[in-house]
Length: 145
Image (tube, rainbow, N blue to C red; front, side):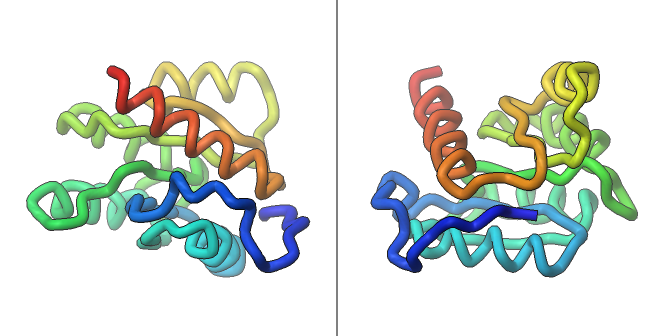
């Protein structure tokens, strides 16, 4: 879930303009809401409802004109969960940001996500401004690597 405190005009973070963000979330309403929020911020958004589809989108996108710049990854999904999908993407050489999205707010869960290859971690419900700032920060750090 995303807490939306927005007037429909976006937050002015145009740094997402032209960025390809993959939203991986099994809850269709949450997935749709996040996709709309990111689109309003100028991002090109793709969506998947499980980790297996996400891995395919990311790996297939490498050879396209619009490779994935960042992934928002729910950790608890069917088919292939976010933990396994993140490990697989990192093993396949995907070096762009992966941000964990989870309802678990414990320190051990955050640590697990980071160890498995996530760049950062957000607990649902997510505030829109926090989500945008985190994506921006992860993209900026990835650019300077």
